[in-house]
Amino acid sequence: MKTYENTGNKDTRSGFGAGLTELGQTNENVVALCADLIGSLKMDDFKANHPERFFQAGIAEANMIGMAAGLTIGGKIPFTGTFANFSTGRVYDQIRQSVAYSGKNVKICASHAGLTLGEDGATHQILEDIGLMKMLPGMTVINTCDYNQTKAATIAIADYNGPVYLRFGRPKVANFTPENQKFEIGKAVNLTEGTDVTIVATGHLVWEALEAAKTLNDKGITAEVINIHTIKPLDAKTILDSVAKTKCIVTAEEHNHLGGLGESVARVLAQHNPTPQEFVATNDTFGESGTPAQLMEKYGLNANAIVIAAEKVVKRK
Image (cartoon, rainbow, N blue to C red; front, side, top):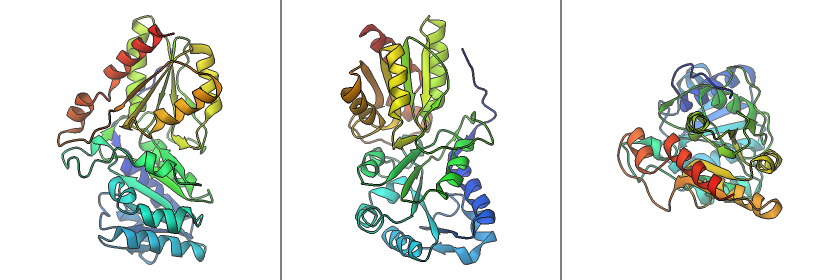
C-alpha cells in the first residue's frame, strides 16, 4: 500500500499564518482582522508587513464580523482570525445576517478547533462548529489536515468569491501532504487504494486514518483512505465511487457526530447507495481539560479507534 512520510510535526495554524503572509505580498485586496489573538492565529507577519491592511478588533468578535462584511463592499477580501469557538458560536447571528444571507466575500478563519485545543477545556473546545457553518446557505466549509494543506487552502480561498469557513488547529501534527500542492475546493483527495473498507477523514484525523490503514493492512484488510478537506460542498462522487468497491465506510472527524462530516456522508449514501457506516467522532458531549493526546484517546479520536470501527463495519457487509 502507498505510505506517507511525516516531514516533521507542525501546527496547522502556522500554515494559515504562512498562507496569509504570502497573500499579503501577492494580493493587495487581502485585508486581515483579528480579535486580540494575533500570536495565536500567527498573523504577526501580515500585521508587521501590511499595517495599513490589518485591523485589531479587540475582544469584540461580533464587531469584527460586521467590519469584515463592510470591507467587502469596497472590493476588499477580509480574513478574520480568532478561535473556532469565538468564530462561530459567539458570532453566529452576525455571520448569518451580515455574511451568509448577504453573500459577502468574507473568509472566516478559525483556529484552536476541536478537542486538541487541549488544556483550555470545554468552554473553548468547540465540537459543533462544522454543523453550525455547513447549515448556512452558501457557506463553504473547509477543514484542513496539516500545515502544507492549510497554507494552500488559505491562498486558494482568496480567489474564491463567496463566504468561507476555514477550520484548523492548535497542536503540532504530522505534516505529510505535498509542499506546493494545488488546493481544489470541493475535491477530495484519494490517499490510498483499497477494496475492503473506505475511510473518509477530515482535519487532524486524516493522519490517524493513514496510520489505521497500515494496521489494517497488517491484518489483511485493505483500506481506501480519502482526505475530505472540503466538507461543503462535499465531493459525493469520490465517496460513492469508493464505496461501490468497498461496500462499507468509516467516517472520522474531530467533531460531534451530530452535524459533522459523518452525517453529510450518511445523507449522500442514503440518497444514492445505502452502505454500512461507522462513525469516529465525539458522542454528543463536551470536552474537558487535558493534553491533546489524552483527550483524543479518551474520546476515541485516533488510529486505534478507526481500526476498531473499520473491523466492525467490515463485518456488517
